[in-house]
Each structure stands twice: as structure tokens, then as C-alpha cells.
Image (cartoon, rainbow, N blue to C red; front, side):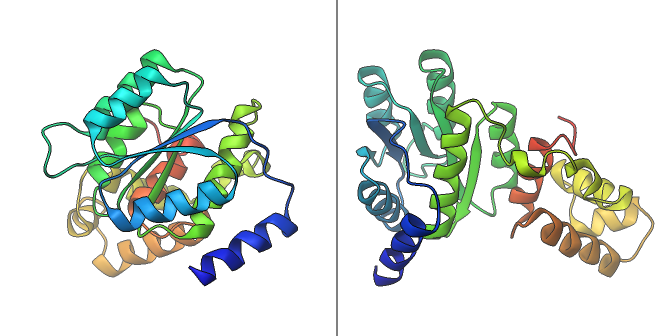
Length: 222
């Protein structure tokens, strides 16, 4: 955790102080490593934390407490329930809450489903401390009515070329790299090049993150 503490101190001295926009933040995560990381960072920032490893317990917390930020895993292998149920519950009961989904980079299908439910942010495992700090920054901006990544909003639609948008759109709809290459009548290596450039332009590291950012900036339609 020494590396994490160093990042935390840098954050405290290198940016505006973290404003306490909430007394209560919810973490619902069944992976113990991700759960501990989130709890440690958010506790160090001075927030009151509710931690749950199950959808059932998370549901009880949502019904009993006013939550301002919720970090939600989507998939719980040992349960018939899912994080999507909690997203819907928060949307209906606590509209002020900023929802940050935390899940595997392999679950692009789940990421798209979460986007359609209008979650506020998306973190891909393995989570890095810097990812959490950035997510909190964005949550604070949303809480005061600012647009997420507003500094880039004026030029976001010009970031990707038409071909890059076409490739990302196909992948967001569930097509594989090979299928995208066939549909666009190009080589697999060309698709891979477009995706690498897309990742760099959007400052992301997975297809799920790329789709999320593109949807946030209206580069991709629903």
C-alpha cells in the first residue's frame, strides 16, 4: 500500500482539496482486493464508507441511508442477483447518487447494458489508485452540475476518424475483430491499428472503456 499512499499525498498537494460532497459512500464489490483498495482510498479521503460484498446487503444499505456515490460491481457469480438491480434501485430511490460501475474489462456486454441505464462512470479491473482518484474528481464535478470531462467536450467529436468510429461501433454491438474486418472489407491488422489509435485518443486501455467514453461524448449513438 506504500505506492497508494504516495499517490494519495501527491493528489492532496497537486490538485484542489477533495471536497466532502457526501457523508456516505457505498461500495458493493465481491472481489476482496478491489473492495479493500476502494475502502482504503475512500477512507483516507475522509468519507464515511459502507462496504458490502453482496447485492442483498447493498440493497439494505441503499434503502436505509442517503448515498452520494456508489461503487458497484455488476456480476456476482455466487448470487442470482446482479449489480444492475442496484443501479435500477438507486435510479428510482436516490437520484442524487453518482453511480460508478466497477467490473472486468472482459465484460463489454455488461458495460453497454450499464451505459443504457445511464451510470455516471466506469472503472475496469484491476483498479489503480489513480483511477479511483480520477473517478472521485469526476463525481465531484457532476455533483456541482458540471459536465464530465468538460475540458474536452468542445472537441470530443473530432477525436476519432469516421473509420475509427465505424470500428468502435461494430465492437460495441458485439462483433469480434475478425467480423469487423470482414464487414468493413479490410485486414484484421487494420482493425487492430484503428483500435490502438482509438485507445490513445480517448486515453483508455480497453474496449469497454473506449465505448463508455465515446458514449459519454456522443461519439457513438445508443
